[in-house]
Image 1: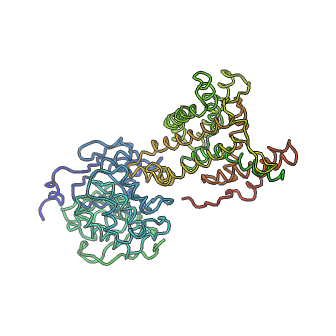
Image 2: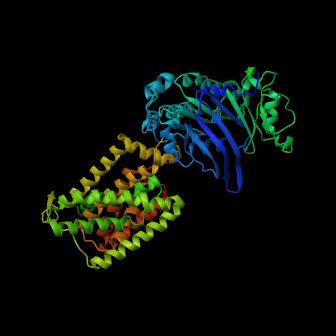
Image 3: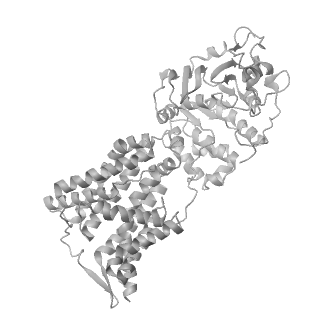
Length: 296
Length: 291
């Protein structure tokens, strides 16, 4: 590996999504502080970080639900920073929100139909979603409240897919789901990518993110601490970026912008980070233990 | 037999009250707007119908074809401008704004039409005509027609909400407007469509009341809005068929009250309203856990 880890990505052409120096405030709190990222077509770009690092805020700002106080979001070269969420969705930025957010009084099929109401032209149809999730066809008339958490997540993904996004934003897919269900949902990712989509996801489960992502971006207290390809970083480097333990970096492949003084104080009892063991982070495949969450 | 007659009259009057109530219920259910100008807008629709009939001499039924679309359009425009602006601040602001709208409309009507009461003359025997059921029960054609209209309107709304694309979007936006935005739905437009539907029913309610009774500038708040509220609360918030049930319960209570003592008509309705509020605040039709 010569040169910076992301030099190969630039050969994919111009970025599909380009976020520059994004600053977002929640009241007095500076939730994002100058975050930049570039997502290239066909990538699986994963944003990782602890609770409150600003991951979801970043995704919600890209989809238009939060207004930045500084910086810009370019989509396919167009500035979409001031566009409303629905205009971004019809332009091709579609998000599966955290907590699924299905329409509870609508049936499974009606949820998908809402997704098609202002859909772009493209390969995804309700029929195709039914082919991917076989059970959904038989249960199309059920209210989504009767579904399990994993099934609801599948409907939420289907609802986003039928809008035929160019970039699919996935916010904490694994939240509140049993590990086996999370595995199954992430197992669908290759099928989704095969239709030409780009995926930008937020994941608190780091080993899961490292397994599926072609590029990772670690946030800590609203700032970028690590940007790299999973193959180019060690578990220690990811851990350092995740908790803000700067100074442990030795490899030149990845840019690390850590804050030393944040230090180990970030490692508090509430943190639910699961870092992969072993020396090869990309190879770590055992499912992380999230049993304390379980099915809702 | 007089009691049976009272109950039948009450049921039929309930149809009129359901017409009052369904728009109020729809706007609350979809966008959380309690439209305090609801009754005044019905009166405006009635006055517009009176004006149209006076100027063009069209039959009453033809005036519906103008008044209903005009009010629906007004609903869309009001929702997209004043009401949306209030909603963007807070749900409470919509209460203030619609209250203000109510005051402005009422005083505007007083200014231009004076406090005299007016009725919508139909020129048909519909209003005065009646038929007999058995020997003692006499039913006015008009009330039967209004009841049938209310049922048809509710069926139509139900069909629209459950089957059409925009009906689906209205329900989706009522559930979670942010999630709808993420699917490319402009919820402001959908709110506008819901308001247009509600105002269409408001127009029907206003003209129907103008034919059934008489309209004054204050009728909107002292009769239509109050009865609409009572019907919605008795029936259950956000439930369309609940408004018919609520209207019928209110109508029957009033007629039974009138049977006991003619001056107790309105009071009896409010006693039932209060009893429901105390004993069953979610309304008679149980549809809990909408989220």
